Image (cartoon, rainbow over all chains, first blue to last red):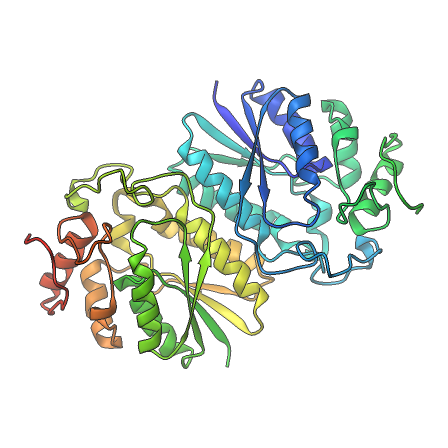
Length: 222
Length: 222
């Protein structure tokens, strides 16, 4: 059976990709988490638990730390606002982060016998208004080409959430059995989900709109 | 003046790119060398000397080490053959290396005020027969798109050697003043250029065909 790698952050998007990959590659799947100095390193534990849950291997790769940003420097405060209030460049954009992560995983995939797919959970809501340019369909298309070419036409980039909004992902995740209680979204990486940072707000609203219960406990009410 | 970054290995290709960037960006240029565990780390010294020669800043960035290959593991012997004898995947291909290097430099460029260009010295001879897929025009086009999009349409990838063979680069380098004595090509990274590894052979032949004197001293005759 051919193998697939899943770029696994521990969040609900890549967690849903992991379930889809397990279905399509008959669990011949490896979850890859990259430590690039993110402050919400707590994600890693959740990524690991998701792999245990789906009975697949999990690997953590060390990466060079990209230029400093809100997501890698704990001294910069994460704003308690929703993505709707962010105009232009998101303050949480880590410059070219997804290019770096995809390049690392492409090197691993090229080196691995029978590996023919990389799953990456970018979605429409992150791409909206160019908040995260490295989640746009244009960026994904470019990287899919680079990966396919750079791996001698061996590895394809799969982005099953590319055209979905966060609410759609909740609905899809429910179908494929994403273990929501093992997903971590909060940027702050404290004991509980803070409930008020951009990703917490986005998560809560998605579950509410989908009419599906989110088992997550939040530190603060909306 | 806008800034340009040059992905600088210390070899003759990126060394020629450095000279071109200095011309086009009025020396508002920074040379970036990436340490990805290559055994020929001696290149770094040469990259630094080239920057001193052109009076521009030089930075060394640590990168995660890609999957092991002949260029990063000193226990694997570098073959004493020319590129012409290599069919299919080059034994010196470091999986997706240029994707990784370009992603690192794109993150730096996005984070730097007024930076609008990245120079990358991929050329036709490395792209021939798909020896290095991450030097092909298809790969370059894909990464150029990813970089332009991922930096909010700020940074363009410049590849002035993309359609040139090694001999053309010697001729171009002579015009733009590449300091050949400060360029390092050998994969083995010993005291002198070995003279018989694929890049040494390619370098020697290029200078001979161009009819230009190569100041390099080689350990072995052709």
